[in-house]
Structures are given as structure tokens and as C-alpha cells.
Length: 477
Image (cartoon, rainbow, N blue to C red; front, side):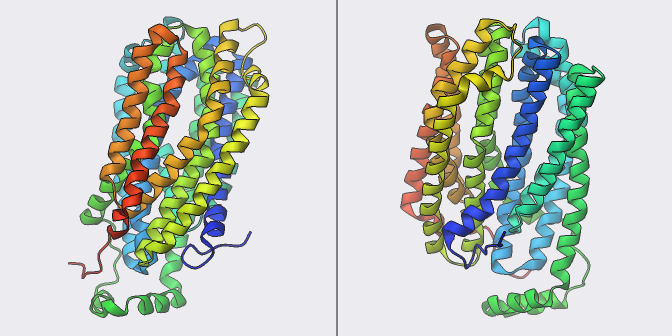
């Protein structure tokens, strides 16, 4: 596959072919999460599937925090790359790795201490509580590896390399499936086997990914042609270049100023990436209140929704990198062309998703559940998918519009829009569940997506995002 340059090639083509490996990679990631559920549901039973579902919303929140942190780092890294400031670009990578891996250790300890209290607070059915706690405890032990894996993927994307994360995701997906079949299907380790398979597969991929990244960064040091291009781009900053060349050649592994800029983008990015998961977590008690059979059907539908939003979220992340690189290079008009191309891209994805779910939702739900499962499980899953199928265009438009704002560092309205999205989902689910039943949980979803999109799009139309820039061409002190 030809490598397209986001600064010079056709915006539509460069966005699509950059997003494609991200989409395929994330689909593999969702695929093996789905296989976890299918294997557990078929080999262990309906209650075990419900236990994984009770844990899923919480675990996904932590993964989305990792992805959001990675996006915060990737925006800064992309802007330095677009401006040709390779030395600072590498420091931003080191700063991100040190900071967010430290955060992951803290979150892992927090999860181990409070997982049981959170599950009880979410009204998890008593018959699945022990299994859900076991799954979470294993998960939190491996959280630093899972965090590192997702942060590294975001950094590769920031460097314009979305293929390496794809290859590693394929590797970890296949390894996870093989281990699932062995630990759950052959050795009968149940919930524990599924959790260990996920942690081990992503942990090994994280170690491999780290080694590849270190080699990639070393390549920037040795690339003389890149240094020449850097000098041309920075004619107006000759003082900076002279100063940097006179500095010691020691690596600067941490920069507090860079971390501050990363956090500025990372916090709203974490929120944006986590909206779906936080919404699921906050309304989990609503679903749990309807019993384990309804929860099993909801879990199956939720897994499929997570797969369907992959091309939308990946497109938004691609737009974020595209925006950051082109604003770093001083070309906001090219960002607008890329946004229009992304609108067409997510509209096409939405049509494909709608047709697929409308035609095959019953067969999809049945693949998750034993033939003897309660009718409520089948009814819940089918109702979920047949409704949500028509609304994925809203999350696609939301994702790419948020991508422009995030890539430029214009985070205030972006954050507000995502908070309103979350507020609508939680409020409608809790207030309308007594009248609409469990359907209130998924009816609220497109309402939040649409509101988020309209607010972010209003900000996009003002053009103020194009005047934002997180990096500065100044002497490092």
C-alpha cells in the first residue's frame, strides 16, 4: 500500500489510507473482545457472559482514558512533526510515555482497591458478582501493559505510521483468540482464562511495540535528508536552530511544559473517547436492574455497537492527526478540504453499517448466546441493534468535527459538547427507564451523538480553531 503524505497528497486519499489501517486494527481489537464474549457465552454460559458485560463498561473506560491520553500526546507530536522540529518531537514522545505509564500504575492500584465497591454500586446482580470481580482484578493487574499498548499506538499514528499498530493488533488478536480457546474452551478456566488471555496478548504486543518505536525514533536522528528539510522549513527560526545545534546532544526525556500542553488536549480527548464507555458505566445500574438475562442481551448488543463505531472513531482520530500536521505546517485551508472528504467517508461507513445490522442483527445476537438462553436476552439484543443501526452517521460526524477541534488544540467548546452528550445519555436513561424500560438506555445514545455534533460543528464554522496552535517556535530554556 502506498504511503500518503498528509502535508502534500490529496486530502481525501491521505485521510482514507491513513485511517484504513487504524480501522482494521481497531476492528481486530474489538473482534477479539467480541470473541471473548462469544467463547465465554458458549463455553461457560449466560451468567458468565453477563459477568463479562458487567465488567466491560468499567474496563473500557480505562482503555479510553489511555487512548485519550495517547491522542493528547499525538497532537503535540504531530504538530512538531509538521513543523519539522524533530528534536522536540522525540522529547514529546518520551514525556508522554513516562507520564501516562505512571498514571496507568496509579489507576491499576485504584481499580484493585475499589473494583468490588464499584460493581456493588452499579447494582451488579448477585449471581454474577464474584465472576465480575475476578475478571476485573486480573484486568487491573495488567493495566500498565494495556495502557502502554494504546499510548504507543497513538504515537505511531502521530508519526504518520498507522500500519505498525495494525500489524501488532492482528498479532495480539490472533494470540488472544488462541489463548481464549485454550484457557476457556480446553482447560476450563472460565472468566479468569478470558481475562488472562487479553492481558497477556496486549502486554506482549506492548513490549514489541516499544522496541519498534525506539528504533523508529533513532531513525530520525540518523536521517540526514530529514535534517535538511527541517532546516528549510525553519528559515524564520534560525536562532532556534543555531541554539539547538549548540546544545548538548543528551536526550531530554521529560519536559513539563510539553506535558502541560498534552494534558490540555488529553483531558477533553479522554472525555471524548470515553463518552460511550462512561455513558455505559453510568447507566449500567439501569440495565442491571432488569436482571442477568437482559444484561446478557445488552452485552451482546453493546459489543456489536463497539465494533460499528470503530470506523467513525478511527476517522476522527485520522482527522485529528491530519489537522495537527497541517496546522503545524501553517496550512488551515488544507484542513477544511480534509474535513469535507471525511464527511463523505463517514457517510459511506454509516450506510454500510445500517444495511448490515438491519439484515443480520438476529443472526449476530444468536452467535453470542446459548440456544437455551432466556428469551429476554435475545429480545434485548435484537431490539438494541435494530434501533441503533440507523444512527451511526451522527457519531461519525461528531468524531470528525471533534477531530478538527482536538487536532488544533481548540478544546473548550469540544469539551462542553462531549459533556452535554454524556449528560443527555445519562439523564434520558435514568428518567425514562421507568416508562420505556431498558430501551431508554439506547434511545438516549443518538440524542447525545447528535447534540455533540451540532455544538462542535457550530464551533467549526466560526473558523477560530484555525488560529490555535499548541507549539511555539522559540528557544528552549
